[in-house]
Image (cartoon, rainbow, N blue to C red; front, side, top):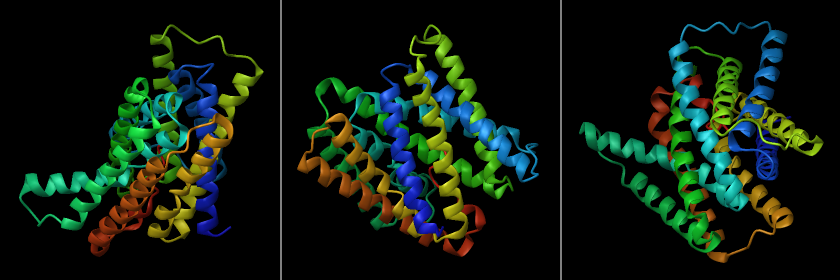
Length: 303
């Protein structure tokens, strides 16, 4: 399968994961869903590492620890946002990581007094946040505003997690090892959060167990498809195609959850997608002279 088809498949699988998270949230707390998702991912990646005769030993455990803290925090916030927002809205807010990264670049340039701030990046960030305002105003009720803020913050943490994935790639860590340790971090963090919330819920019937198993399977399969796509395809094409996940989530939301369809919200989603693609292109264009293999790592390995 070629890279574009792999990215379409990955986007579809991530949207299906979101569907299962939303369904499972009626029976399980966020911590439990994160725990089971991490456990499935850790088992699958351990088997894959063994099949490839790779090693799980790492020379940079501190980097994996920090990546796990930020990435799992982003994942927990995203799953929590999915439980209280229309599916496409939660997906869009989490996919804002390229816009947040552009804002980080602008902030770094201003603080360090270095290179001139690219006016195109500034315009991209502003357009992205205008799109968020257009999404939130018509598509969520007042009592859902908190979930919207949480979803927005999950996108910011996802941007930080992507920077850490890139750093790990430059340190020579293979994608399988990065995903394995992230999955382990998710399992432990989910367990801790579950215990803090009073222990496991009573949703361990067949339906509930199949849902959390599906969350882990869809997420891990999506990660593998996306990782393969970025390893053989063009990064900019792949980064653009991943936004199909928003379109898939919108369709699932309307079909399965009767999510409302607001023209202004659709316009906002289009603005966020367009801003994210432009921000990704500008960032890659600026990094082209020094880009290495690690820069092709997928930005949503943490999802």
